[in-house]
Length: 269
Image 1 (cartoon, helix red, strand yellow):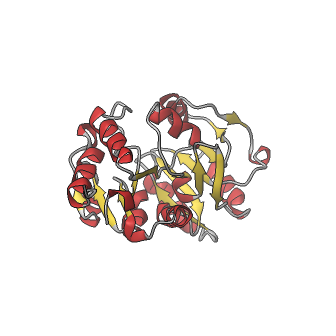
Image 2: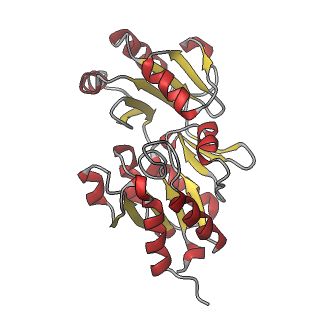
């Protein structure tokens, strides 16, 4: 197996980009070199397609990406969904209960085409500003398109976790994607199933998928991929799951991983 046989999949926040929301130049150069050698490169993230495009800037991917933490596989080149796994209708009832229980929490809903803000707070405003993306404002009833995920923005994580467990939800799962975001996803949708669908579409086996991520919403991806890494800024539990621990994201963790892969799977001359 050489670089040409490998699909490299990277998380964004805490992995590809630094604490200033920029891609370190080392990462940018390494990714471009990786693709020039014939390697596949894709993103797996909780972000929307528009947010990914703005984050990448002039850096391009050469494979579809896993978005909405696994609910959507999306082709950035053609701007079309490749695979959509939607939340069940019950998700709307769960969202309403959570809005009532946590009146200060921000609520965002991701569909294949849009990000909807059902309730603003300082966290959602910072989110939209940091990612520089457009959003639509409305109510639960306004979002007619199938939901890929719902995001609850609040610092009350322990209380929110306890409340969602008390709901005994069916057909959905909850995951923390940061210290202020609690997400509702389809029961069988996560980055692990996302990269499974991506690999199938692109003709890779899971043994040919190399994945790097830093947080709890990356756990399933790290369990699924054949080759794994985490930046050193990841929680200990995540680092222990990874086959390789790179340096911190601010110093080019993805470049560290690429250099290791290049050394191990060099293209034969």
